[in-house]
Every structure is written in C-alpha cells, then in structure tokens.
Length: 211
Image 1 (tube, rainbow, N blue to C red):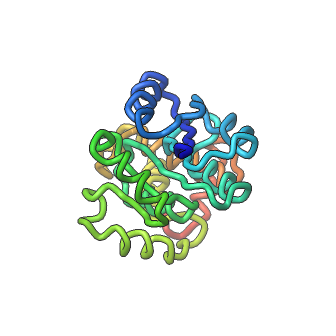
Image 2 (image 1 turned 180 degrees about the vertical axis):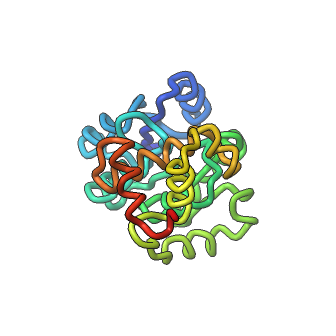
Image 3 (image 1 turned 45 degrees about the vertical axis):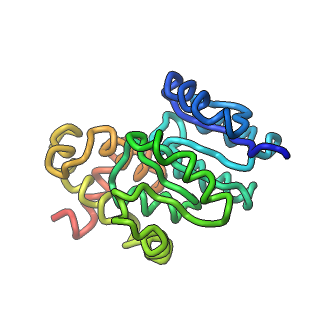
C-alpha cells in the first residue's frame, strides 16, 4: 500500500529535519523547503497528498501560498504548523484553504492525528485554540466575511503602528508576539499592494477607524 506523500515548508531547517524524522515511520516525506515560493513553484509536479507549512515565512507567507496551492491542487490537504496562536490568523488560514492548524508546541502529540483526520476529509485545529469545537470553529471562520479591506486584528495592529509604537510595543499591547505583529504588517502591505511602511501609514490615515 502506497504511503501518504507529504511535502513541508518552514524557514527553520532544524525543525524541518526533526518533523521529517518524526513523520517518516508512517508517512513519506517527499521534499522539504525553506520557503513557500519554491514549494508553490514545484507543488504541481510533485503532487503531494498533504502539504505542511508555517504561517510566517520570508518572501511569501503561508496564507498567500495556501491560496495559490489550493487553486492548482484543489484536492491537496493543507496543514499549518505554526507558533502563531492568534485566533484571527487561524481564521485566515482556514479561509485561505487550510484543512488543519497545529501549534508547534503540540506537534508531537497532534501532527500525526491531524494528518490522519484531514486525509479522512475532516478538519483539525489544536484543541487549545478551539475548546474542542473543531468543526464549529472551522465552519464559523470559513463563513466569516472580511471586515472592509482588513481584518479586525490587522486594523488593531495598524492603528497602534500609526500611533508611533514599535513592533515590540504593539506586541505587548495586543499580547501577541513581535513576529505575529510583523506578519500582520507585511500581510496588509501584500494585500493592499503597498510597498513601504510610509505608504501603509498614509493609507491608514485616510480611514476613520484610525482616529
């Protein structure tokens, strides 16, 4: 019987090696990538059953990659493996086409289970994010409509940045990591096709929710 074929993308190569060793007794890890661009470019040729990737990666973030992968490989199962515990980000991940969302802190206990469940057609999310209500959690996020141009969390981040706070200070106010703040900032720039921080802040100043 042919084993499930998996590809992975994460800019932390040591973690990739560890996860590959963890999965290979049961699954076939076909290839690993240090960025999402290469993954997207080669995915159709490799045609994996499951793609596991981080949310925050250089050059192209995981959410953008998921949308592009879903358009060319509609049947592939996509699982995010991330440190990002932000509920808004998890919601964006499922709207982008994810089948699973696993925290890296829970990977040892949950990643194989997540793979098995998504292969059966179910969704999976780390229970600490969902209070055990995985199905309701996923369906609620998939039905949510975007609020204007940006999500509520993105607006919160941008408002604080416009006030002159550093990424570290914004992280402290919102009780999220600086990496998550940076992810939201650059996701906004990509979504709005904005090339600089100054242009992003100018955009924000034209919006009533900043004042």
